[in-house]
Length: 196
Image (cartoon, rainbow, N blue to C red; front, side, top):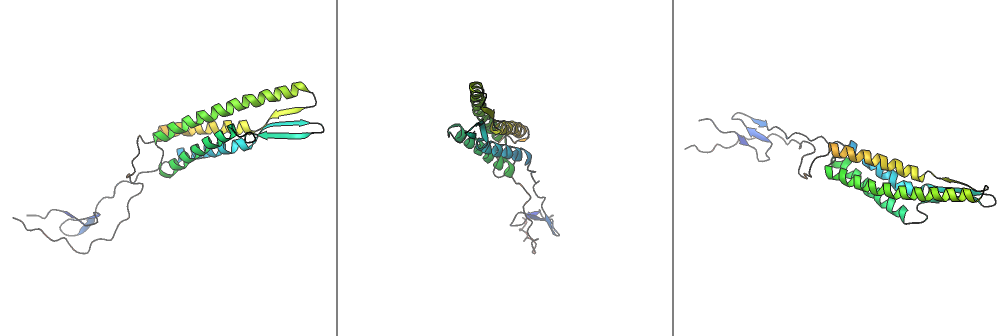
């Protein structure tokens, strides 16, 4: 009667009756880092947007005054927190691969960022119009801040869509990312069990 194949104690080799043979390694799961990197970049752009000038005004004897969204706190802090959340999700997705929930949360955060920056852009545009209408000596313009925020929102939306398309449906913490390292081949053949 032929001996049944036996598996080594570490589970990486089997005895075929004559020699130890390595068991097939579990297939490596390729991690798609692209969605996470796109989301991470979007979050960083949204984080820096409130620090850019959102309003610039010049007048004789006064000089040029710029205001960022962080000067008033409030909305600037909201954009900062939203951007940090997007960047954190992007870092997580880049490290272990995108999952669908990451795309959904990113999309929701991007909507919040779009609403905040859109409302503030409207407010700043109104102030620019009022300032320039009040006097020909005042030169006022919208700064780069809203456009930086808008670009971050656009990149974040693209990253969310990519994450939704490429992401796994659920979290599998025990899913192998790379094949496990091979241990050395056992030196002794297995002991044969008595046959009845």
